[in-house]
Image (cartoon, rainbow over all chains, first blue to last red; front, side):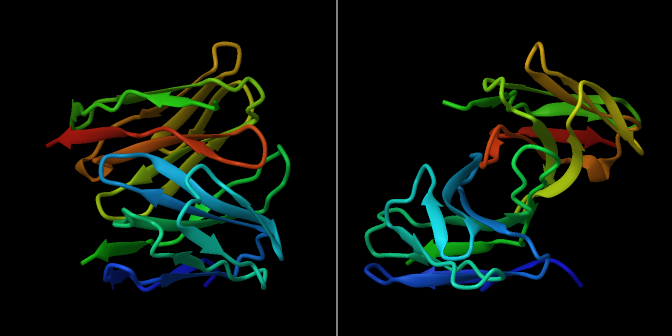
Length: 115
Length: 109
């Protein structure tokens, strides 16, 4: 089946810990994205990548880091510098066509809770 | 600032009625427009995409786009309780997708 997988589904972090959220896609999409969603809020872009070995900061990149070593994978690390990391984290991907009919699809999400 | 505005609701409609969801956007360069449905605790699911002015129908869903007015809407005909969810509007003016905060819809049996 083609799609986007995220793991783990639930993640608990202690204060001061770094944690890494996994995102893998087999849709052959060039672009991948990380969003954060807080209760009752919209999606806020953390980082996005249009191509392997390149990525750009979104609106709320502070306290997060990413890598894009493979087309299929775009892991997100939530560092201890992120003061309020409890949220629902969504990974998405798209073909990255400029204009045209590019469409974004989402993985199932990871719910991170700080203990 | 590339803003996407939606009425947060909640919007309540009786079963079988038409639900109308609205969205306005600020960037006139936006070329692609999307509606996603998000059930509580789940990730967004694509319902409709629209790229040209006018209407696009898919089953019980109709998306309407008016670029001159910077307005996109979603109509849900014959609303069902299973349509109860939050509906997110998204636009893509360049490399990024921009989302509204969503409209919560409740279909009352």
